[in-house]
Length: 280
Image (tube, rainbow, N blue to C red; front, side, top):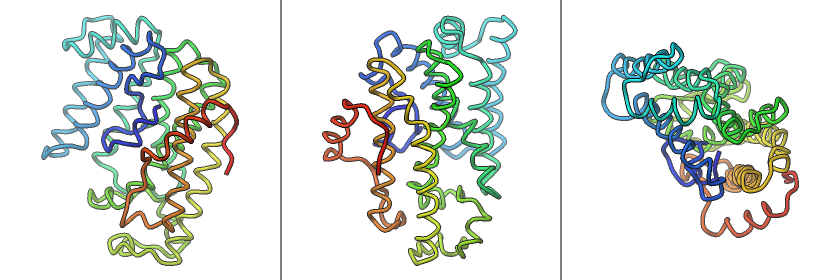
C-alpha cells in the first residue's frame, strides 16, 4: 500500500519501495511489485488473446508450484521471490496465487452481480498486497491482517470509482449490477456519461460505504510502528481525500479522474504525522 499509487494508472494499491518504507523492506517489496505488475500486464496490456493471457498467468502458477515443491524456479524473478520473500520472510505462497487468480478473473469476467462478488474480487486482487507487506514487516497478527484487509479492499473500491470511464472503455463495470438496477442506472447511462440524479445517488451510496470500510481499517496506521505506520496513515488519508474529490466534482468521474495533486500533500503529510482515525 502506498500513496504513490494514486498518481499512476498502472498497478494500483501496491507498495513501490517508497522512501517511507523501512530500508530492509524495500528490496523484497520491489521484488513483489515486479511479480504483480508483470502479471497484471499479462492480464490487461497489449493485444494478446484471452487464451494467451491466461497461458502466461499459468506460467507464473507453474513457477509457484516449483517453489512449493522445493524445486528451483526457472526465471530470475521467481528465484528472487523464493529466496528474498517467500523463504526469507515466511510469506504464504497462497497470497501470490490469490493475485494470479484475480488477474485471471480480469481476463474473463467483466460484470459483478452484487457487492459480495466485488468484495470477493478485492479479497484476491487487493487484500493479498497488505498481507504480504505485513508478513515482510513481521507484523502479521490476526488483528493487523483484518485491519489491512479493510484498507486494501477500500483502496480497490476507490480505484474502481476513479476509473469507471476507463474501465467502461475496456468493457468492464465494477459497480454491482443489482445496485445499479436499484438506483435506476443502466449501462447506457455509463456509456453516455450521464451524471444525473440516479447516478449521483448511486455513487453517493458507493462512496459512503467505501469510506466506512476504509475507516474500519484505519487503526492499523497507529498500531504499526515507525515509518511503516506513517506510510499506512498517509495511504489511508490519501484514499479518503480521493473520495472527497469525487464527491466535490458531484460524482462526475466521466469528465475527470480525481487524483491527488501537489497541493494535497502538505496537509496529508501533516495529518499523517499526527496519528488519529480518519474523520470526514
